[in-house]
Image (cartoon, one colour):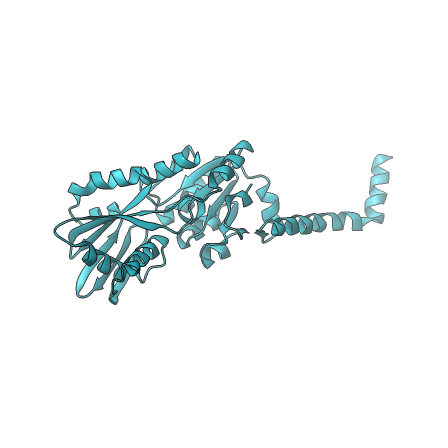
Length: 297
């Protein structure tokens, strides 16, 4: 009798079932939009409810993405004005938040920039170009090692800066080590609370960053994340997500940069910060308009 009654209901009243799902999706997406969360489709909304692991990028996601130059440690008789003029001229062609910080620092000191030629961005390592006839290299320690530039006397200084949650960047002029430039990016006011909120809901929170290990460790400690991966190249971010998926984790990846786009596309749910790059927003299933991690929770 129950089967017969149910059959009659389904045949006679299909509209009730046909309307239930789209109405739920419409209301859910509408309520999310009121909270500054744009959801592209119903599938992303449904999968988001099953997320077991949230992976967070560092710069521009946990931090504000508006870094400032804090220290310039010089080497081999180069002057600070000379170093800032050359490195800012080089970085004027880059869109990376750290590059913008260096350009702003030089402009604040009214340093005149020169044109950069043969600019080349080296994924996960840094940038190179020719400025005023001088060959410049600027990036992380891996870049110095790869190009055989001796910086051994300054490794300890870089580590000290990293422990203070600053990002040390290495600069070389004509294959000669010139300076360490440290940049600090403040943590967003609500990042700690949002991460705690996710953890209370039983979500595993992991930080994934291309920054050096000591800086990543300092930031992770400040925001209460126990699990992090540092010095991850852009192409490795997707592989890290696949590793979690192979362990049957439903992964939500959150990022804001060009190098996060492949990872956002690989994750079960890609979540982009609305304050980030267009390509990250385009690759994501969900966009946090206000740039707050509370949107994920």
